[in-house]
Length: 400
Image 1 (cartoon, rainbow, N blue to C red):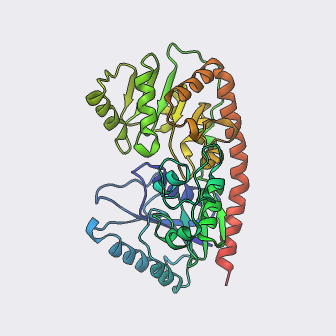
Image 2: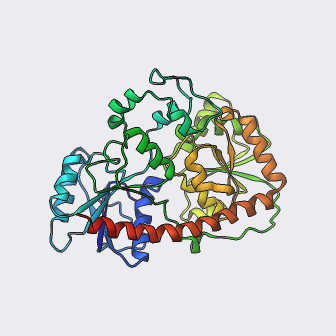
Image 3: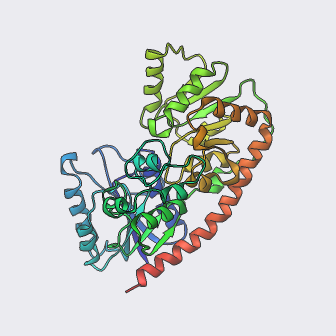
């Protein structure tokens, strides 16, 4: 069986959506599957293949004004080459402009197409979570109810007519594809309800090399208790983060400002408009290995409003770092019993977040152990999921 990953998102941009296809490739090769990737190279001199050589990761560069059409045509040309033709491709979320017609053209080559859905549109999640008012609701959102319950309050006619226009959704919950791959059960259940259909699907939580990531926690009292923050964009909870830093000057924060640069932008705004002096916040622009950042903090503050999965939660738990995050269905799949949660009713209240962090600090070793023990459960889950994933690929490839 030969599998090719196709993704316009790829490192060296190290967002979750970019590192995910790399880790899927890592997972397949680790299981002995003949696998490779075709990826979009953003700049002619900007390359990163990780542990794989150019024979595994094939990069296609086109000028931005010629993406995606020219890029997709070059991908198709390579897939049609006899020596490169796979049994199936996994078409990742980042290739958002691959049309159903393009998928059909690939299938006409005798290649199965598995589409992959990373997450749902942020504004749609805000509506279902009650953060914005909408005329597309049949009744008000209940801030005490879960996502699935509130989803049923969205007007069915609206979903039937508009769901195909929701970004990241229309091409990846596709009847055209041979199968759909989701990164969480939350995504799968939500998409099936929204589209009122159930294409052949599987949930494959993002892969993590647990042998490299697991670190058993120990009692390690420090002079300062450090609250770590990875991404402070608006969608990742910038308002909550900003208020926590401003309202609790006695606490010690550490912000990773790299990636999309949102950390630096947030702090600049705080200095400009809130007279923030920066004394309670250490900044780190870039780390080569994210494990180093997790090992330097005592708790991860991750108030992201919504995610497809939330891989950083599990990463932190692997290092024995407690995580405080929003009570959102996908986060329970990445954080399980190892994370701590704040409900949407209290989401914008900095005092609630910081009081929970204080409770984590008061019994820190217990919280660290709780995080690590969940990571061990997730490791066992991954072993089972990987076996199911390989069986699923064989089924798709052999299907008529």
